Length: 320
Ligand SMILES: Nc1nc2c(ncn2[C@@H]2O[C@H](COP(=O)(O)OP(=O)(O)OP(=O)(O)O)[C@@H](O)[C@H]2O)c(=O)[nH]1
Ligand SMILES: [Mg+2]
Ligand SMILES: [Zn+2]
Image (cartoon, rainbow, N blue to C red; front, top):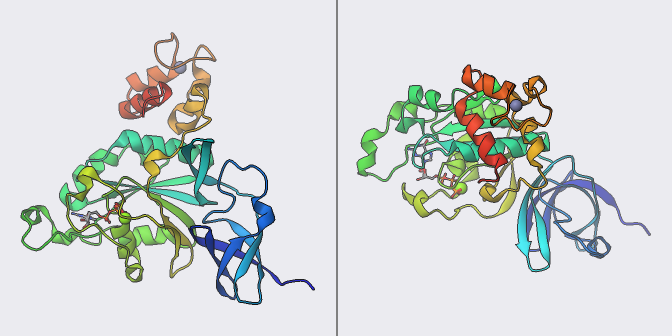
């Protein structure tokens, strides 16, 4: 007697149980015991994994096999037995990095770090600059405008101006901007599996709710909640989009690993630097103070943005 085997996609994981989307609907599954045998240093199954499940008579499922991952966003979790690789999202098609133009002020070094992670995973990266109502579109473009020429599109958005009634910050809110960029973001997300990441309080949940009002994700109620932010969003889950595709609101990207990246390979993950290194005089050039460095020359000539160069140097030196 052979149980029926169906392909599916893990859309949610919680304490050892997985929700698997199959052709015939959502199934609650657990991992087949034999998959768990032996030593493992990371999540065997994670949201975004393609799996084969067998249907049990009681209507639940059992995950029999997990397809090899094309890509993954991994977080390193130091444990007594050693460092464990937590898979935040398996097989993403693209990464969408959300930062606020203000409140909290954008930390572009963190963005550059995220971009390196995306490059290393071979993921297309898109930047969302949210809360443009707080600074105005023009100023927002001054802050993020140097990214598109490098190859990272920027979508300028205003998810909401939902500050509490009578809040004094309301003065700064330009009602005309509400909803800006949301349609563009929706189009970008449709038909793909996207990892949405960014610091706490920048408006990720608000944006997803604006893209798809039915989602009803929890949003922080007080506008300055970011200040000592714990993430409001905690469940590991893929949300299906009405137009096709899935999006994951991935908290805690801050701790995403730049693991096993050697300092010498880092310039390869800065596209605008990667194009220059062949022209450096020394092939082990660190692009710091070596003579005949093409990268420094490009920085001095204004062809490489100084902030990107600075991020490169700091990441290379092992800084956060
Ligand atoms: N002014 C303004 N406020 C916004 C905008 N988008 C979101 N907010 C506010 O920013 C705060 C944080 O929004 P969330 O959507 O909870 O942020 P988040 O990124 O999901 O935060 P975590 O779940 O903690 O990671 C809330 O008070 C929102 O109302 C915007 O475009 N403009
Ligand atoms: Mg959230
Ligand atoms: Zn150099």
